[in-house]
Image (cartoon, rainbow over all chains, first blue to last red; front, side, top):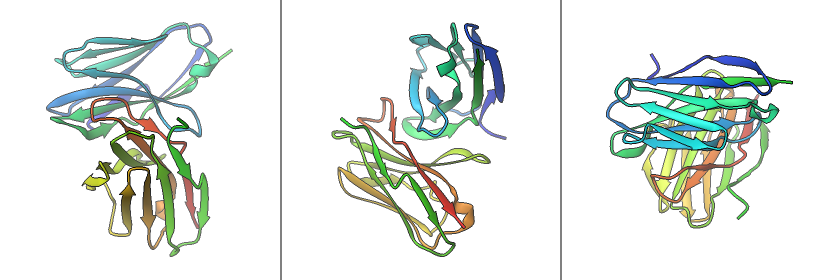
Length: 113
Length: 113
């Protein structure tokens, strides 16, 4: 079983609508959690990085939340745009080594006009 | 800065051939990472360097894979001999330290026939 589970696997929404992507993890001890956006044919781009003490972080229309007690994170996208169509990947780092990472399989978001 | 530069962008080779992928990190970044991404396995960390020294190569799938970083501005990932199951997109990323975001290159799409 993957230590980082993302849901849904894919999602289709209409332009202008909001959506929320989920990331549940089982890794321990937790170090930080990152959300990446990956456009088709390109490398991932960092959206947010959250440590244990942070429970919310925003980057424009993207807002990530973290509940370290329940080991859940969400990425909320407000007023979606066509350019939000991409894969969103959740990455959790373990322990004191921020580079010991576990990767989610990603959520494929499609925004339609 | 031009960002992380990878070459070639596409590589098609035959089974058994040697493949060398190249990466130029962002100037001043002390960390360099090599990733592999496939539909089946998602994103996987292969190896990372700190100040040109390999720190963790536990993600390298087998001895056919090797990586070097002879200086702060250049790294290679070599596969010898290549096999069809090595077909994937290989990303290089760099970061200034272990706490901040990683910047990914555009990737090299490798196809082994």
